[in-house]
Image (cartoon, rainbow, N blue to C red; front, side, top):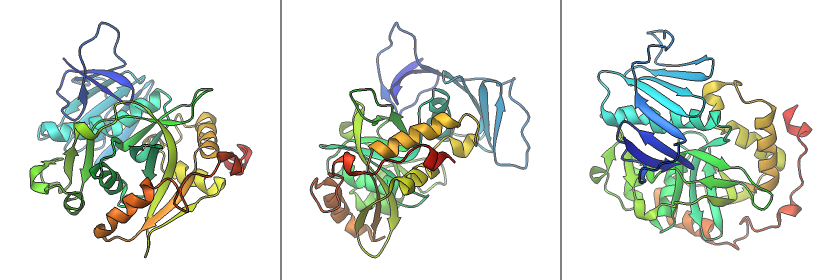
Length: 319
């Protein structure tokens, strides 16, 4: 067995997961077990559909043509039966992406689809539609020396009475297009391919990875514009933007995402400043973006007292 830690979970796996941070074997129980399995209990999947999700009792089954069938059970176990043609790297794509997101969802952890980096004044997270530059922005900050917290699946650490929302560290990998890799000083040919015939590359930097949960200072909703601009969102707009970028519901629909999920997001936008960040598509402008995000007192920086934000009652966003 192999032993790892990610998203605040201690993990034991029958297969090697080189993306994750290794830990020594321990006597205490593990939070998550990952094993190859025949999955004889899996439901039938339609051959003409490339991606399918099924719920059976306390297990969520997911099937990808060319990758295999996977099952997440009670937030404690992932079993998978890889497709015959899937390489080990291809098999790990669902394990460390969708399936990890489903496991966290089953453990009642709120997840976002985005990236996060630890800055001296707190973590900053980036969400937005596909292609908005979440990984590129995180990579630019990491290239500047700031530790990565997570890429793709963000696990929100629930606040206690003495703390605020935070980000749990995932694993030290960012998935980048070749041009983005070059923009942050990496040679795409020196980076591992995510899978055969996929252009995206995996940049792994253990020395620039945060190993502890970090309080979240601000969340940025990314987009493109003619110039770099950071503007605050109203609580209602912030709620809608964060709701759209929650991770697990896109796979499980409304299953398990009831009133508690909405209450968590309402609490989130009332506590954490949310900003719209637009930038030019020109990757040569990334240093300006890094400067804007790492200067605590620029004009639109998230330094205003949170009490100045109008709080939004749950009824204003749940109805």
